[in-house]
Amino acid sequence: MSHHRPSRVAIGLSNHQSRTRLASGRASFPRPCRYRASCSSTTSGASIAKHAGWKSSALRLPEPLDEIDARPALTADKGKKNEKTCTSPTGLATRPRSYLRPGAGRRLAQPQCSHRVPVHPRRLAGQYRPPSRQRSSARNSARPSSSRTAPAPAARSPPTMSPSRHPMVIRFCWATSAATRWCRTSIAKPAYNAVTDLETVAWIGTQPNLLCCNPSFPHDTLPKLIAAAKAEPGKYAFGSSGLGTSPTLTMELFKQKTGCDITFISYRGACGGRGRRAGRPRADGDFQHRSADEPGQCRQAEADGIERRQALAGHAQHADLRRDRVAGPRRDLVVDLGGADRHAGQDQGQVAPGDGEGAEVAPTSSRA
Amino acid sequence: MKAGGFEPGIMTVPEIDAYIQTEIKRWGEVIRAAGIEAE
Image (cartoon, rainbow over all chains, first blue to last red; front, side, top):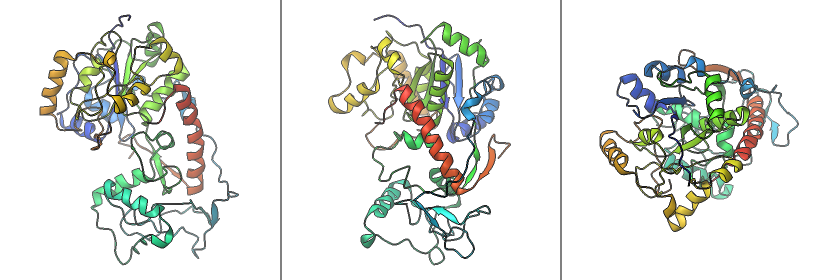
């Protein structure tokens, strides 16, 4: 197996928790990692870059890739079968949306609402509950209407959730991007169809994905980064928190548009040492591959195209990871993590789960 | 919102649905080209 040069690029998702840590000065960054890039889907990458002192303006997407954000002209297709005429005398949608926010049943602020609203075959109805109970709510909504618990009228029993949950609920129901809906790998077995069961609430805006780099990284502009990645295929890597997330897919689009061969490192779980591992040299071209049932450990996978799989057959692939859950990890993909592993364990004792950079809170189930 | 890097925008519900459908098609192509598979 050929020896690969160390990865020097790591790109991580910056979520609210990491932003908080950055803002408070409690964030720690992987020292071996010379280059960091942040694709933010839930918060401002610019803010993160500012707090972290990273160069960001030169790498901000999608300046050289205008087509990424080239939205097509949107026209309402009022001839769809799954639409029906709104019967509200005011013309505003009045369907029960008590799971979305308190004050359920109140009309949403839709000043441009047409008199035709989409009607999905099934939709989540009922008061919003925490995720574990929300699944039950989804299952309940999927039952026949005869056995379904009718959603409580909002005026009579408004939801009792805290105000702080409102943005999350909206984000969950609305801002779930199309890409995430399509590749819904973050949920093991959702009780709902993310495409058809979620109901559109409102469009409030977009957030850019942002690439940031450590100031010491020489390729601090997109042209430089692209040129370097093309000159040395496989040398650089980027990371994101979980497969199927918008940063991951954004970078996949970036790779496809630019032809760069940048390795994707996926992180799932609150592993304090994942950042260090991201900057570590790969041993014999393999990622550190851990069993999925080791809590707190990050799992790294490669999610590249067919061509790359053939070129780097020794790398862990999705199929290998799926095999883990059945027959355990492949012995030839398990490498000795050595000191970095012990260091990661120390980090986990110091850093609360989900507090690290680029982290998403790991699911509590055994599925990793 | 702008100060936080957010870009506010407004769409009607039908527009959002059309946009989502377009995005599904677009990102589906990206995902298939990248060889990403649902677990």
